[in-house]
Amino acid sequence: MTDSTTFRATMPPILSALKVSGDGGARLQLDIPECDLPDVLRLLAWRERVLVVTVVPEGDGKQPDRSRKLHI
Image (cartoon, rainbow, N blue to C red; front, side, top):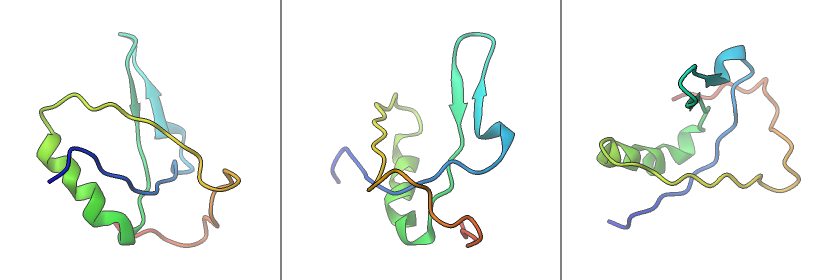
């Protein structure tokens, strides 16, 4: 198993998608399409590890049509 994974995600249209805590940290919530679920599940093996996260907008950076439900 390689030590990286790539998947598509969007930030959900909710106020709590990005939470900034009082201690200077933050928590990010993501919606991930079912077709990328196998790649996301690889994160379970790294629960106890610190992760380096890089975010790259796909294409023109526009979010997909939010009327489509994502099943996670």
